Length: 250
Image: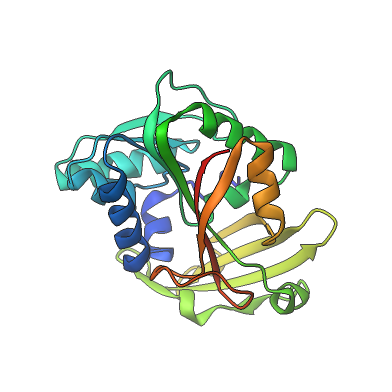
């Protein structure tokens, strides 16, 4: 994970404000399962704080101290209690089990090595109560988009946002795709009118292909029970943008 990219929780939330449909999906999953909820890579609590506000006991595990601080602020503003734990999703032991574990918003894709992904799934398996589920979402890789990662810096107009201190912030990204590692290696440039390239941060994200994901889960002691292609639970298909997986102990 790029520490620099996640060093400013407020800036991260303005750059990635979250998806209301995704939040609703995970809240519904928590309501369906009941009991205690664990989120891995919980970030600034965009998913977990709303779940906690519904009355579910929640724990968030996050590697970045800055993101944890942002999550604590979000929970305090909402007036909800969440247990925040600094830890690494590749291997963790919280000493108890949970009724629902979630890995949302492509957080799993910060793990680049197959061994790290399997280690994560094995840790999740040890933390699942009887009948519990792991629910995760990752993007469905597009070969066309990966082929366009040519290293050229381009403006991402859809990612522009307004910062209260900096004004309008524009985002440029230059990416290359390492096919052997299945990792997109990018450099993100954030610029305001007064400060060009005020933030330059690397971001490396793995691709997990549709036939690969169930195999990795199986190696971790889990199996896919359901897989959807969007937040409305449309069955997964080759042209879906997302892989939304509901998993159980194998």
